[in-house]
Image 1 (spheres, rainbow, N blue to C red):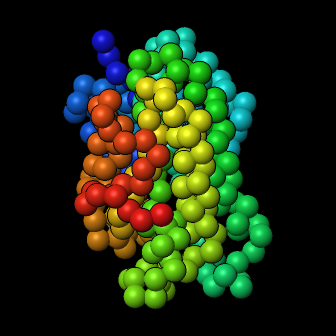
Image 2 (tube, rainbow, N blue to C red; image 1 turned 30 degrees about the vertical axis):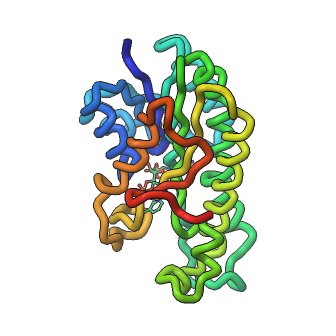
Length: 236
Ligand code: NAP
């Protein structure tokens, strides 16, 4: 039986790498991307299917779910990877506009809810579905509150708080699905060189994708409602 996965924002960066690594395992990795041309080009490179998916467009996401149901009947893996870091000249919290906060939350928070709610009926049809949400150490309250942490100066109000919100909503879904075969976990890829950070990261997208792929392919004994990076669990 084939395993089918949907990855949001899979036309480039870590999402593309997750789709590539799924392919290596024989998983059908549906490349979700908002731009049809770039999405199809990525899917063609990977030899995988493409679906148009802007995570902020509820009707479009619903149409994508209907297409997946028609083509595959169920969904085994959902990776909520699409994310943004909205650029501003001055990133101090006091200089962050509500508009920048809204723009960030539309994708990093509300988009995850829109996609998860639309895909959940398909995930419930799979024997043991896995949901993986791409978070960050910058979303950890424990890390953010530690003056000795190397992340202390990286005080980005919109991005960091969007990932903290994502952490809580991941836990909320894990609790709703507690006792079902569905597992819902958070992956921190680490600081990877991608367009998100103008390629300043010191890890590769390939390295960053690995933890998400591992959480997406956990067996029945694996955790749910957990926050992981490559080296192990992260503090909330
Ligand atoms: P990236 O290279 O900038 O890729 C982001 C992806 O999200 C792109 O495919 C982008 O599509 C897509 N996206 C943005 N808005 C979207 C929308 N409304 N609908 C659908 N797709 C949308 O960034 P990345 O580094 O691979 O990031 C992937 C995830 O890892 C993000 O959630 C990020 O927060 C997280 N993360 C990254 C790092 C890091 O160091 N890179 C660290 C921790 C966590 P377009 O090409 O159309 O813009």
